[in-house]
Image 1 (cartoon, rainbow, N blue to C red):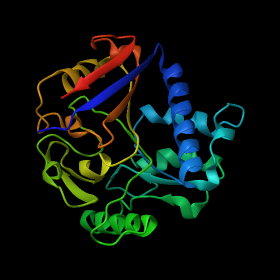
Image 2: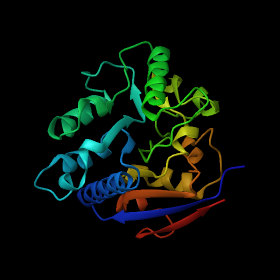
Image 3: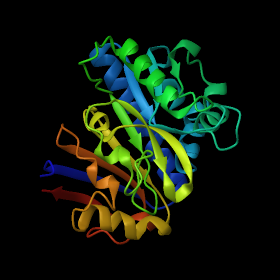
Image 4: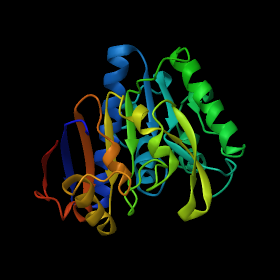
Length: 261
């Protein structure tokens, strides 16, 4: 049975306002983690939606840049396409151009997935890198301070696509996942690791996502078809950061809470 979770969702009227709200959320989560534990280990997603947030975080004239203790931040990725880091489809490249080239984050604290390698090798190397950074043996599991997710129109999150093998993986931190519907391989954190994070949030915008947001959080539980439903954090809390268009089919489209049982 799925774990009960309280979903809190905040809604901003425009995509620009959402980006600012997400930047505030990110800066606050990193600051709180550093204050509590001396370090912030954050896993981020790629795609178009977080790009505006990354650009705001890197803008020294905006209020968020100075609030992030960059020297204490370790940045990881939730998933990656199997392409080189210079490819236009690389999640790493997008983040580098939007944020990493403009902030004082030490290179040793940027932990990218090596999408240019064989998918299985890349997954194994990333799992080893995570274990090394978190000081884990082979039986341990990482607890990220924040995992920031997106959601596709098909209900996927990270590279956990409907009816793919990674949905059934319970023991690994990172896996290579063949996505038949896209005829490609992806590298992804597993949902069990995502659920161990102290804070987990979805960042979602656009009217094209309104139906899937409703289906995932208000519809019947069917994670094979809607993998985002696997995200039920052990903390019992899940945050949604939405624009008004993505939230329009939720019970309270201006923001509220949902109890998932």
